[in-house]
Length: 63
Image (cartoon, rainbow, N blue to C red):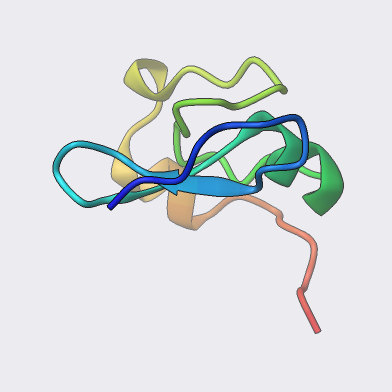
């Protein structure tokens, strides 16, 4: 149920069937969502932030 990873892949499914976004997806998106994504190119580390802090972050609005 997974897709082969290539340079243009935006996501794949892991062994548990969960959708995982690639680094390319995050770069194309243009900002860090502060969710501790597996392939975050922005260097965000989830273990240093509480759930309350992530809901209060100033994020760009998606249209």
